[in-house]
Length: 124
Image (cartoon, rainbow, N blue to C red; front, side, top):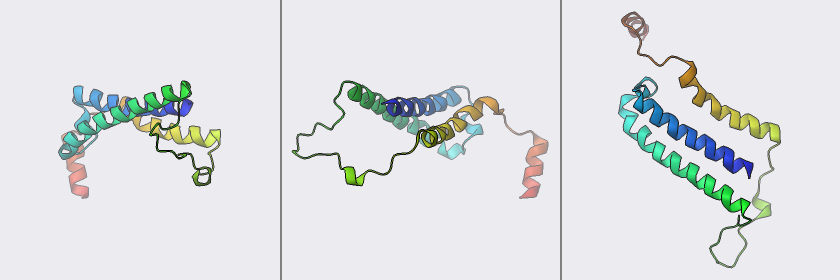
C-alpha cells in the first residue's frame, strides 16, 4: 500500500514541478520551446495518474484491491508475477525519480550569457 502513496507523491510532484516552472517562466530553461505545449499537457496526465494511485491506495486500504469487473475469473495470475524487488532496490529506484525533482531547485535556471553562448556556438 505504501507503494501507491509513493507513486502518487512522485507523479503529483512532477505535475506540480511543471506547473511551477511554467508559472515562474523557467520551463524553457529545461526543455525545447517547441515541446512546451506537450510538456504542459503531460502535467495533466501525470496528475491523473497520481490521482489514480491515490484511488488505488484508498481502495487497497478499504480491502477492495481487486478489479470489480464481474467477469467471473481471477485477475491475479501468480505465475505471471515477476520476482518482487527487495526493499533496498525499491527505495533505490524511487530515489532515482527524486533527482529530476530536486535539480531545478538546486541548479540555477537562467539563460546563458552572450560569452558562453558564443563559446558553445564555436564548439559545434
